[in-house]
Image (cartoon, rainbow, N blue to C red; front, side):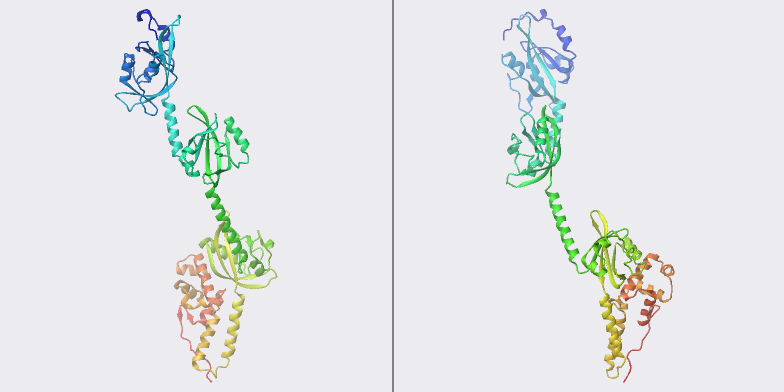
Length: 503
């Protein structure tokens, strides 16, 4: 480049300097001999200095005071800086560099640099202009985005809109698909179809081409090993390095599908066991025991078809022989969450009485608190016991031909049978149940027993329910009679003569 200009004193750039001094971009004027002539405030601020002399006398001093590297940390070799290339007669495009003071390398700015030749009216080169644009904030934001994108465990991939090729992929997507980074970056969305099996695939592709949001919807990814994976995919327009792109995010549906299959299989197993059970079963709501479902054994036991009981209440159906059964059950469920071995009377659809043993537990179905009710018919058991007692008493009517040992054993068997349920032996009663039985024999009411034992009336009722179940009775009078038969008076067993008639 010819250097045939007039002496510096004869050249005045005052008007140009006034024009560009307030620009947001940094402007540096450089003479053809690489002397730094002038810089605006923006250019000084981009180097962290206040005076033109702090930049250096010429480009050689500038290089000594500031370290210039490409963004990959490779240094800019001598002769390749835009000013040097233009002076050498070479074309110089825009470059992005990292600039840091030589004495403070931890301070760094990112700048985009362009270089122009200014000619005079005879078209003779006059000086050079460096145009600097501070890209520090933008590249820092992009760096934060890159870090967040790569660290995000949610699978994601970025597609460039200009050619519909993938330009970024994060670790989450690589782990989801089993692909490698090099398998995806540079590939077209048609080569690795992330929108396959979407019901609106063509609409989604049109949104992609036009840079519009793609709503989330289920799709299928074909993995490198040939397997297919169900996902939810959505697209959001973004810019990456000033290029319009689409950020695709994914949700793996396999865990949800496995959970749904397991839940479905569990429900199927429960439903089969419920329907095929030989014991009467019912599912009720927790608040009122309204029937939600019953099995075939329930229909056989009660005489009510399923459609006759669904959404109806046992009390409204007059299913319980005793009016307070419903309240007893609800109180026990709310206090303990379950019922074990409650002896109740049941009335069938045609009014026939049935002796039953009830168990219940709380369960959750479709996020609703429910009660699983198990109803066992013990009428045959009680009839068998009654027949056994009658047979024993018939035999005991004439024991003259039995030995004393056999008579004593028959007497014991008769006493045991009269207690109805084998677990009703006095040894099976807890100390508290014995106390309650004593007070029942004394004729105390629930409230009086609660005061005597320092317990709540509700707890007294629970002990009474357990006591009645163990000794096989339903009423206080029967409990007192049972205690009398067992020789229990106020908690103490009285001696009873054993044996029968002597022949």
